[in-house]
Length: 169
Image (cartoon, rainbow, N blue to C red):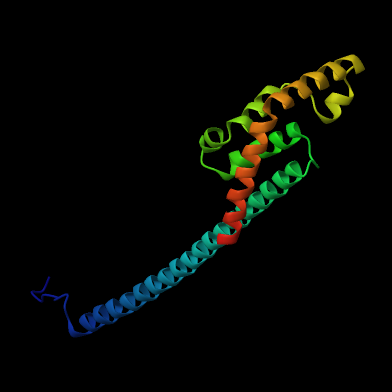
């Protein structure tokens, strides 16, 4: 060492450091702006998806309401037997109303459904011996006679409830 000290902050290195700092700040700003734009794009997609799901939910509820109106009208016009109506209505009510509300407001529909739930339907029914089908039909007819007045009254209430809901929508 000859006694000359090298200072790290010479004018050229200071300018170099300042330029590098400016460059890094610009790169950082570009990255932040890019990420902000990407986040905004993702947020718009989330909002669009939420709107689409809300519309699907609204359409499903409208379809369920329409199905309830059709089934109750068919039942009230004697175009559908009581048991078949109770089975279909119970499922729709469970999907359309808050948990427990359907059973509370429409106990006869739920009661007939529960009383006939063990009976085979469609292919399972066709595969049963004739004597068993006749026994089950007699049991179903007895149950329908027991529940008829109450199920019809509840079907009228359902029809009114969902006719009013469709007019309000």
